[in-house]
Length: 297
Image 1 (cartoon, rainbow, N blue to C red):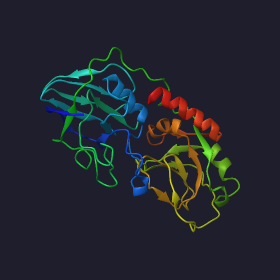
Image 2: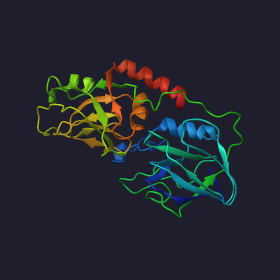
Image 3: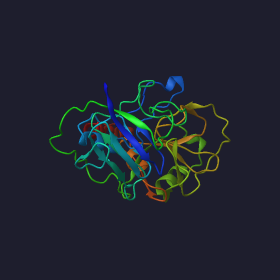
């Protein structure tokens, strides 16, 4: 994608963390680099499709409101990512974008995508390493991001299925590999909760507040490869659901793994939102992932 040199999206104000994200950089776990990518890829895909982009095109991931301006020309944008029509941001106009009520994160897509340099196969920021994202850090006032060439007009807005942000949706989990490292009642405790999202959550992992999950070892096992969605349980007994910037290896035991199709619904929830889990088989998880990809990717 070639940027139009004079066309830019300027960050006027960022009252909360915001950065560039895209579909991630898979294939670099062996190098110690997590996959990264949008925390809620469904929202990224919806915003991108509404302006005619590929679902994983680079956009802004914001954990609150955002104020932006178009420089060098008019920009077609979509904010929020929950579907709906795109809108024109005229040249040199400033627009204040408010946070979605009840949602932890929102996306701002620009027709043509954000044309920042590709680093290790992705344009998005990896905050834990300070690479990517065009500036190697969270966005701040005064940053100007290049914009690629738009594909053309969009005949109709992308309307995703309802319910992604509903706190009533259970999160499906498969049993993890470390059952022998947990107390006999730990799995049932996970399924029956109750759980809520902890405030000390980020792109590395979402902490869950609820009952203590009993363990029977002292973190003496060797580190093992980790995946997004793994429910690691530190010695204190409070589970952490690993996010896209998770460590590539870890030593805490894994009680279960939240299925890929449900991670967006989990990661979208704001602190103190309720969470409940339901067990499914590995075959069910594969079928759900296939259905998820057919809709969103």
